[in-house]
Length: 428
Image (cartoon, rainbow, N blue to C red; front, side, top):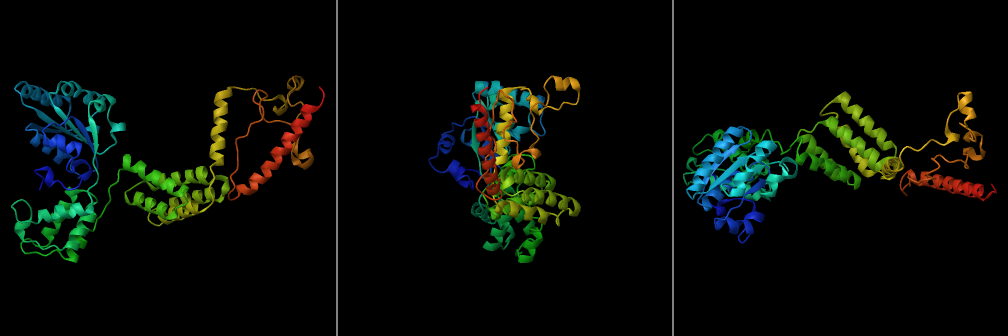
C-alpha cells in the first residue's frame, strides 16, 4: 500500500501541497540532502522512495540501528561509482540519530561532492541528536502525525479491489469502524493498516464483516505515542507544568493523564509536581508543598493505579490555588549576588565568640539579641556584609498568604530603613 506518487500520499499537506517549494523541487527532480523529522508512520521512508523515483535516481537504504561504519563506507563507495557513471543515489538513513558523531561525519564528504542525496529520518529533535556539521549540509523538514481523516482515506484505499490491498477479500467495514481504527492508530499510517489487517483476520476473511465485537478485540490494547526520554516526553511535562502555572486544572489533568498513559514514571511526575509547588505556588499557599509531598508518599504506599488519583488531586489543587514565584525569584537573585560579590567576610557582630581570642578580635561585638529588642526585632543591625549594604530579594505578591506576609515585611523593612537612617544621622 506504499504510495507510488506524491498524489498518493496522505497527510503532510503543509509540505507537499501543490505549489509548495518541496513539491516543486521533487517534481522537477531537484531533490536536496535533508533530514525528515517526524513521528513513526508519518511517511518518512515513503518520501525518500518518492524522491528517488522523481529524480530517476538509485535508492539505497540503511538503518542506523543495524549498520556500522563498514557498511556505510561500502554504500558510499558504490554511490561514488554510480556518480562517476552519471547516475545519482538517494541514500536513506533510517533512525539517523542512532549514529554517533564519527558515523555521522562519514557522510559529509559524499554530501559535499554531490555523490549522494542524503535523506536522514529521525523521530528525535535534530537540534539535540545530530551534529552541527551534518545539519549545516541538510535542510530539516518537519513531518506531522497523520490526521484521522487522512488515515481513514488510507484505510479506504486498502479496501479497494485493485490488487494491492485487502479489497479482494470482500471485507465489510463501515465508516464508523474505519474511524475508530484510524483514531486508535494515533497518527501512524503503518499502525492503521496493521490494525485493519488484524480486523480482516478476525472477521474470517472473504465476505467477513468487521463488527463491534471484532473492533473491541482489535482495539483492546490501545496505546498512545510517547517517548520516555525524548522530545515528546519533555514537551508534555512542559505542558503539564505550564497548565498548573496558568491555573488551568482541566488542562493539567489532561497532560498528567497523557503522561501516565504513555508510561511515564509516576515517581518522576511526583518529583516534578513537588517542584511546581515550590516554584509556582511558593509562599502564596505553603499547603501546596505539604500536599505534594503527601501525594508523593501516598503513591509510594499505594502504587498505580490507586496512587495515580493522589497525583491527580494535588495537580488540581496546585492549579487552582494562589500562585507566587516570589521565592523562586528571590533565591535566584541571592545566588546571583553570591557570584557577583565573591567571598565577603561575615560582619563581626554576626560571628560567634566562643573563645577569649575571638572576643578580643571583636567577634560578636555590637550584636543585638532580637528577642530582647522592642517589638522582637533589632532594627538597627544589618545582616549583610558591609561591602554589599542591605539588599531586597523577596518581594511578596498580592495573592494568597503572601498578602499578609507582604504587609508584615513592608512594615519591618520601613522600620529598619528608618533605624538605619537615624543611625547614619548621628555624629560619629
